[in-house]
Image 1 (tube, rainbow, N blue to C red):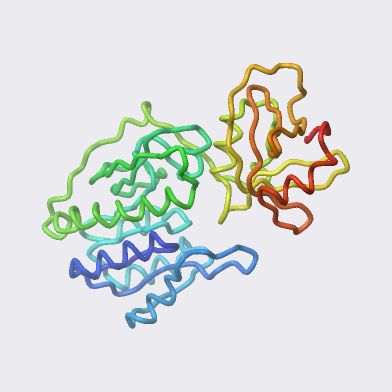
Image 2 (cartoon, helix red, strand yellow):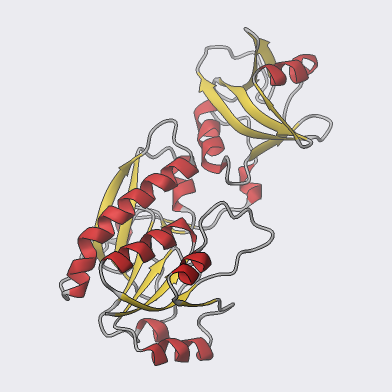
Length: 307
């Protein structure tokens, strides 16, 4: 089948490799040029295209008429979108004769929209998954072709969870791509009233509110730790502190202020609205510190309150 692929990120590579293994004829890849202001920790779709001698283009706005004509002239039987960052308009979706499909990192209809990997951790979910669905004009709303469930461990970060999703995406595509080639792809309607939609996240969303329970703060930290921008707070003098890793603890102490720094058993803790978190990996003014280094740096700050 003649195939046009919209792809980016590691999930883009997973999708492209699956299509190649399944015998789809990839005629052109649409992707994004890397943003110089973004930490690109993921694999390059551009390099994959070069290695496989496939045309790749980088539209700023893929929905402009010249790019719609480009897709139409390629005469694809099928279109796939693997973590492409722009929504495709109806003119593009109408082009392929055998459908347009999108890979989404959640168990739809839950967590439609942006940044589902981060949001499920922020919200303390215990499961998520990967979904391939028919594309429609409304984001992540088309009929489901197939899904795989992924369990979320307490120690998972956005990166480790994303890697799990990539593994399950490979398995899912191996199952459903032969069905698509044979014109037998499932169409399971979504009940959007039973789902949820979340928008994108920005670095500013990583600010910690110490009035939250320790578990909620931990979930934010693991949702935005490396390779994401990190959770943060401020010392009383205005110095920013990035918290790359910390662990929550329960206790019955109620006579401390949320955000207050305390020392116990040679560990640095921050009080929260319920319990406390133990600092394990932090960064201040460009200095990365762990364990004993944190203790040495913060020993004189006991009793101060982070904001």
